[in-house]
Length: 174
Image (cartoon, rainbow, N blue to C red; front, side, top):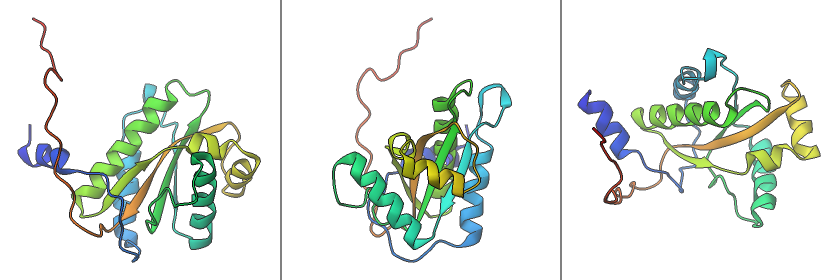
């Protein structure tokens, strides 16, 4: 295994504090492209990836997610970019496909000096009338479900250290 890649995996951390400046278009495109190369069931490429940088729309999405969470704070940690991943509800493996997309994007972001955090509750927030209206406004097909999202931006602070790996995490059966 390429040692640099293993080190990238070992050092990626979820970020919960971002600098306010927006990431570059080149950085965003690199992260999005990495998502498009994630493995998908039967190679169907069923996920949809939506990057949101519009401040008013980010505020709306944060409020929607906060309502599901039962809070008033920003569940996306005030990141300058949100990246939502959706799949057709009837896809072969929607959760697995979307999860692979999100992981590819998190590793790509880390590799170019960006920070990310996997955000939940997109399934609930995008199944509301408000969420369905947004999907329609974005030109997406009916029948999509939210898998997750990324808060994405420049980290404001150093990442924490990895927790020690638990004993018995892996087993080899011969």
